[in-house]
Amino acid sequence: MKTSTQADTSVKTILLVEDSPTTAEMYAAFLENAGYQVEKAGTGKQAIEAVEGKEYSLLLLDLALPDMDGIQILNKLQSSGHNLPTIVITGNGSVQRAVEAMRLGAMDFMMKPCSAEKLGKSINAALARRQASKKNPSDSIDAAPEQSLRGPSGFLGYSPIMQNVFALIERAAQSNASVFITGESGTGKELCAQAIHDSSPRRNDAFVAINCAAIPRDLMESEIFGHRKGAFTGAQSDYEGAASMADGGTLFLDELCEMQMDLQAKLLRFIQTGVYKRLGDSKERNTDLRFLCATNRDPLSEVQEGRFREDLYYRLHVVPIHMPPLRDRDNDIDMLANRFLKDFSVIEGKKFKRFDQPVANVITRFGWPGNVRQLENAIRQIVVLNDGENVTLDMLPAALQSANRSSSEIVAEPTFSAIEADSSAIKDLLIRPLDELDMMAIEAAIEKYDGNISRAARALDISTSTIYRKRQAWEQHHGKFVLPFD
Image (cartoon, rainbow, N blue to C red):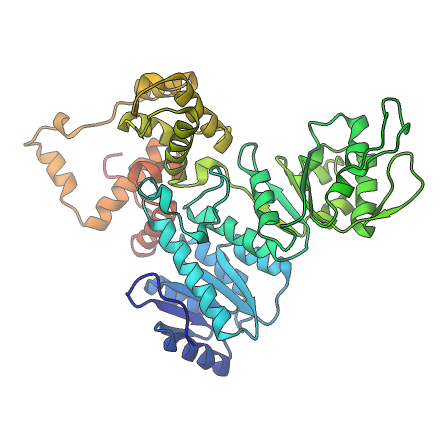
């Protein structure tokens, strides 16, 4: 098998988990011919033991193993903090299993038999994504690879959790299945829907978005299905509606859980049959479109509370995609803030180039309850209302200045100048095995940020997966770690 050039010249080691010896040998031959080193495991137990004992560049995983399901393996690896690029390959696949595997960290999903060329492309793409996620985001704003699925500037992400979202989008785009996007307000649900459409075979046809929370209830049916002149008071002319405008393309229903129950029944029939009527019209129309929908609520809870039809939920909830809150996206906050600063400086004709370090610290540690939308608005406000090359603390919006003052009042950052140079207690505390010092720093950061792993990871300039992995390794050998100065 000849594949495209590797991301670097170092040899990559792949763990191949496959219970069929013949298939394992075939794939191993493909991979070794492409320049990879291959180690094989025939059971889930062997795979987990191998990952615990050694670092691999990539995991190639069969879902159907004699001792456990591949989904169980992904669950175990995720819960133990391993963030290993994974490609699932199986002969017993379905959209639901693909989604489940990719939500647990898999970067791609392929069906057997799989050609050497397709396998090579998938491996190269997965390794490129991982290499991008390890870069310092603030140093590579303009150098994001194609694999990061760049869209509008607000839809970027180097964190592993966003790379998995991008991989889901790429896979979902090639299907015609309905996609249900969930996430808090401001996380980019419509950008996700737009990216699915733009990556799909329907990209050359219309993408029509309707916000079910923004349109009055008595006009919603008309917005979706259209109406004839005189169908109701105020209908002074014919109106085609979204169903007609999106024909051949994609219809995106945002905040779907806000839709009233009687219209949900009509929407269900429309989705099932592709047939609808305009208000005031006796003629049925046919349309060919794809449905995407989103909500900032928990749709299953809405079903259980009787506010959302169960049959509609299962009709639309084929491919679920969850947009993570900004606070869970590792180093993406810093990268996005810098990108917004650059974009808005160009738009507004300003000269801003960077954030002062104290400002960067405030931005990184802020909780951002409004997610990416709030961050974007805050940076634009800074650019519009101020001038200069550096963003300083006095330029921050009121909410950020207030958060900064509160943080300063609660705790002052310790400095080495405050520690006596001849303090024997400090020296004794620091002269310990390096893995113990690592755990002291990790546990102290977690305690400082009230158990928030993401904030602790940002403060330590490491990923959340590193924290989970180090804690897991320590507990396996020593038990629960206790801070020596508690």
